[in-house]
Length: 176
Image 1 (cartoon, helix red, strand yellow):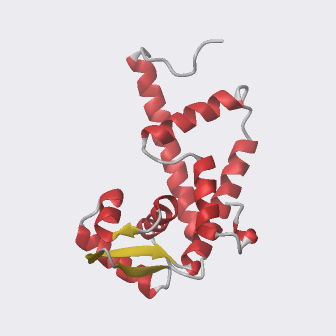
Image 2: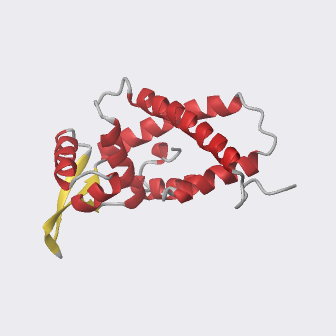
């Protein structure tokens, strides 16, 4: 059985892959928007992305969060101010770096990320259950390669970091 990813794929095939991924990205944007609907707390997609970064990378200086989100520092400051008002993140000062503002998730922020992630997992599982994938491990391998190429963490690493963010005291939050 040949490789799923080839270094020398023809350009037309690459265009087909790019087109399929572009269509899939539209599907996932819709899933993301629906997963944020009807929450007790109104959160925009960029704000949610900031919360996800805080789960996957831990507490961040606002300037580093801005870089990760590809926004200006002033945009990140305003976003964090809104998230602080919603009690989803907390602002902290570090004794070793009093010039920089750090943000970290609050328990309410962790709860929100957990709820949204569960909603997304349910929606994605429903999509996958309708597929007939002949080589699921190869398919997952290709998807994980894309995740890695985008600089994101794998689901296994996400689960590990999520467990660390939640801590040992809240087992109900672990399956995200």
